[in-house]
Length: 328
Length: 282
Image (cartoon, rainbow over all chains, first blue to last red; front, side):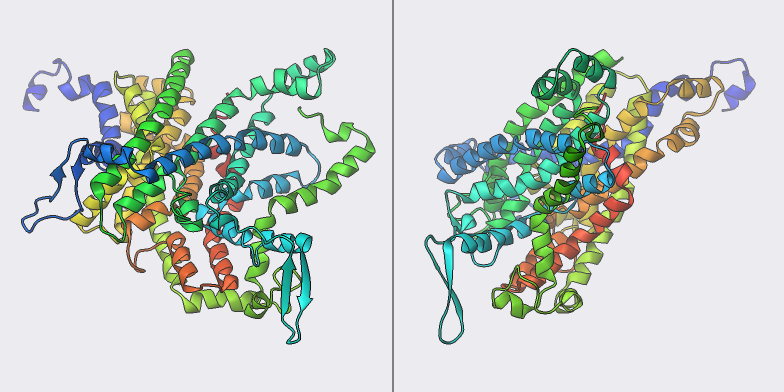
């Protein structure tokens, strides 16, 4: 400081010379530290932990009781039928969840009008996305209930005859018993996926409504003059312009499908007989269960899920990178 | 505009469209309407199988009060607020800083760091579960409100930074440049030039993060045990066990859990949608 006072014409100090190099780090550090502690480092810890067997306990002097098993957990995984069921269900989720994209587009096309009250209708159609998946799961669990849910009631109206016995109790004789969707190993997963589609379609719809708002009107008019209409117009003129919306819709749907946990935990807890498990739920089940914690084995399931997700994440980042390069 | 505006069609088509619209809406919201109707019925109706007919009596107030008096629902609701509000404040504040750094300064690792935040935001929760749970137990944050909002804030910082960085990048860079020529300090540029301009982004993020965190269920299960720190989503599941076969109470409780995000959505609809659809138009 005193040096600077004696030499007024001296170069400014290091900090002000490198202001533009230092400043970003000062702005970044709080977020980076926080993000590193809770997100980045735990990822590597999990990967590492998947090579151990550990019940989550520590010895009296604070040493972890984990024992090294190398790829033992993955070998066990290979022979674990529950793992394969979960993986198969994950694929079913991924494929069927994709229906949300076209269905969202169709609802958006249907709602893209300007009659009175349209704003209200649009927000009501979007409504399912706002409520928590726990609530959606409960709603549908009840909706599917064969005794007094919507499915059961409709079924009774179609296939059952009401009889009242002497005591006055109402009984139903049904030509076919009402389906108990969530208790059926074959159908339960599809029942949950259908429930999951409900909010997801709403999400895709809102993406497309915004996209449709920004479709270039002059191109539509030009195409109309050329005689394009209906499906052709949709496919060759409108859909290409909706590309950014489609990309985001696909991203959020893939992520949503692989993250599905809440609904399964609420509606079936992976049952009946593990038939509705997906990797995210199976991981939770093995890692924290009533039969003792198996952190290492759980981590290996998580690692597989992470690997699957990483394929998609790399693709998304690559796409974003292309945009960034083109953008500036 | 596509499809062709209905006003340009025949009178009949228009009328058909407008008549069909409410039916389409009812069909779409049928599960929700059905559960609402259940939540205002009395136990008698449910037991006698009158689930869809006209309720024999309206028990709206009775049922919703019962949820609060017969369970820890009020505690769960309060916990949810105590978890959600600090999360929103911390993650949005951190993201303003980080987003500013990543959008305005040109340094070599800016893009890799940005991608780190983006990628972190897409990863499955399960890969974080064991270490975060273990760390929370070790530091005494397990089964506390703070343990939950610290984690959520850190995790949501990824999404918020993605959002903020893109938002700030779209602002005219001249603003920053001319301020620099004037000799304004970097933090002053952030505070007086950029921050006032990102207010819409802050509003959008606040509602989105509020909804995401309010609706969280996974971490509520991983990081809590008892009633004291459980948010309403996990609470509703506990109530589900407690109110077995009292469907009128279960449905009332689930609807209550959905109220705050729904209110938030309707109050700040424009911000909510602009936040969700950022990037859906180019």
